Length: 222
Image (tube, rainbow, N blue to C red):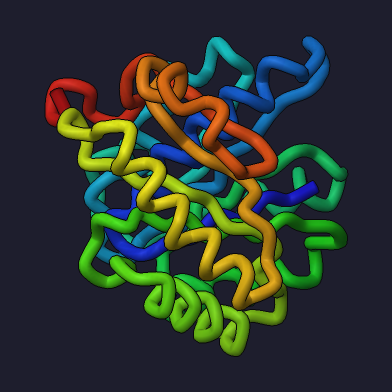
């Protein structure tokens, strides 16, 4: 299955992508691999390709630019080699830029994708998605622009190192409200391990991804 991940700028979409790949890696056998297709080229501040070396021992490959020294580049020279992996039914996670412009890169993927999960990541503490209505409007815009419908929502309510349990739960409340209006399930919650232990019984998403520390630029977020 192909897993497509989008979200408004600053939602923590790439952090979710990395944690999702690590979760998948736990159940893969030695002959299986996971591919992250880094298609986020619209004002990217965090790039999944930055973690390629750390993820390699987990049998997770990150595909991004066609250039070897692509990590620090801001050149939209993408490699679509991951399409062969989609066609061969391997597990591929597409890290997509948020908004309608980000969806344009899916044009080259539609014919290869036969089954998909399309997740939209929300963080209540971003001004563009700080209400359920804004979340609903964002999803509707994406569904109009894309040939593939959004199939699930992700709660990533956080304020980095300042996150408290109530931040996660308040964000969940808004995402659930959006979920009910859209008729799209709340599939995942991404939450730090220590916080999750305090509110585990109150989390309502179908699945929970927990982390001990952020995977993206740990020093920057500490």
